[in-house]
Length: 493
Length: 100
Image (cartoon, rainbow over all chains, first blue to last red; front, side, top):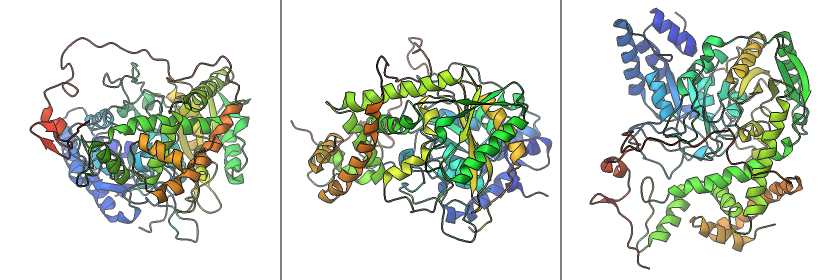
């Protein structure tokens, strides 16, 4: 029998439904794989019983002849940014250590209702702030990939680094991610897997620990485009509990998947040819064009003139929203409380937040506080919001000439953990290609293209019009079929 | 614009994050690097552009005027609300004495 942990979402779901194996066998295999992979540090807590209970429910439903959900029998990893009832939810921070939500996030609830089970809560950058998974209070996550001929631990990307590491290592067939400025796409690219951030509002933010609310979007990470389409369908949907939730039907993305791109125009934004981009990345971009052409698409040049300003605008807007969102961690209602003898309320706030937040979180809260403060609001925050409008307008104008956009996901392949820690700015530049689509709220996906000469994966990014996840997934499928990327990291953990 | 140690101390006070002298020393140049880099936004001509706060056109919905329409966000869940409080007392959040 095929090793069950080598299977993806669709293969597991169909195999369980067809009786090739039971959901319990699948859950047991993945639980064992998770238990063996402690070296990756991908999980903050594991929940093997949750996975088994969901599997038993699926097996029982099948035995009774009931209709099975879209994710029935599939055990997944849950990024530890989603509130899970009774299971510690930390956002990889000390300030939320021990926090056990008394409710379930909408996205995770949707997944459980579709028949999925939970292998555990996945590590991430603290409060999703980071691009390398080195800001977690619970330690760095290692990528299962290593540079050919070396064994230095490499970054799985961030912030959804536990998710990317687990899926690439085949210890989870799929995982949830969240993307504020590239946090699904960049880790997917670094680890040779797929990940899609849908249109802002597709997935409910209710019960997701907030970072920058106007940007945060959940999405799936898996090893194939089909698996992403299935899982996104299960995660998305209107939720009255989220004021920005889209009141639209969820299309049948899986059913409509087609790699035939005849009649589609794919835009190549000239401003994405940036200094500092690896030659191998540029080569993969050229290859991507050829693949999409082969699938029937027409390639056109487009211009997104404000691209270079997207990242600095993001690093004003996201910290501004974060400084406001993170004001809730005050030592009163949940999480950590630091109360030295004789301390008053204000001291308690300041001590709790000093002890509970990591350096990167403090940096961003301070930046956010500064750009929102009296006297600087117009120069920084308002200006950034206007630039954001221009970045979004660039895309709107591009849609007059093309149906979707092809670009690299990242300027480089993964890097060794610890190698970019000197200067926060160098780290931020990792998201230079990912952030524009985030600012504009557009659906965007990374699919693996090839390995570079170090044997590390490179990803290609597809960006679509608002609500047109289908075009993004279809083009992703066209690339997947032509790239034939079936590389897996060699097991060292 | 650049921030000195005193400014960082003031911001950290506004943000309610206690910081040691050593942390302020370390943080000030880091923040300056970031702020210097975002200054480039000043070059962009934004004449006539409205600041964007919502990316996808969406209207704010009204909900039915119904108490506890969704039990998950409704009332009557005091114990759940207090379940994670570091110091819950007599059905309330406990905080140090406040005298102003």
